[in-house]
Amino acid sequence: MYLKNKGFYMRYRLLVPIIVLVLSLVSCKDSKNQKEDSDGFHTISVNNEYRIDVPLFMTGTTGLNEEASLQFQSLRKEAYLIVMDEQKSRFEEVFRDLEQYDDSLSVIQNYRDARLQILSRTTQITHKSPFTSRLIYGLDAESLELDAKVNGMDQEISYFLTFVEGHENVYMIMAWTLKDKKMEHKKTFKTIAESFQLID
Image (cartoon, rainbow, N blue to C red; front, side, top):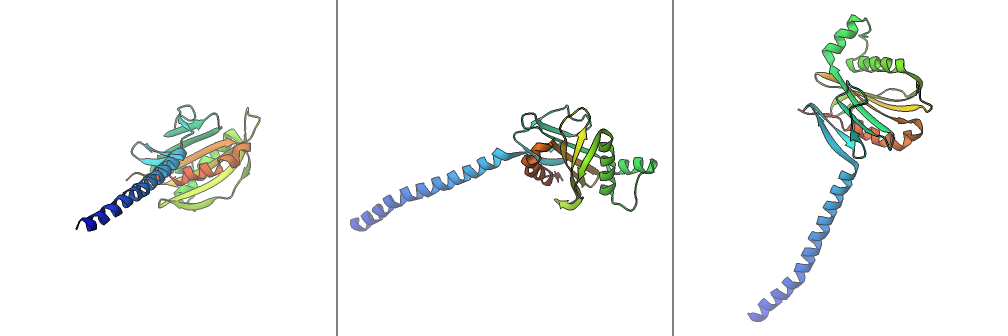
């Protein structure tokens, strides 16, 4: 009986360090994954209406556009982000009154064209990519990239625009940087736009 218990005790003594080692490795792996996730983005909720992932290198600001519901920037990396939103019904009413609403286009396409028209008033667009239609968390969206000259600036600016149609509102996610930093930020700006999600 003693020898039998002694064998069990020896096996137990050998197993404990192995179990502890495995658990510590799993714990380290989980910690590493959490750290990698937290190093990139954090999720921002706005007015209990929508959420969006913003890079940790960007900080909140109020000086980019007073009408924006979200504003972030990184002066060091020359990266900027705003989200604009407005009621679909109000937008359609105003643009129908102005006789600038195109019934052959969807609401989000009309909103896209209206926002591009506003942008073209303050910039000289030098390059515009084709429009890309997509779904973002089940919502209709339109995306494009463009380069533009801005009055008072020597360097061109590259804009990454995504327009999203919500249930009640339409949204414009606009990120921009200097043209020579376009490729540096392209993947990050794409990740931001694709993270947009309404809060039910």
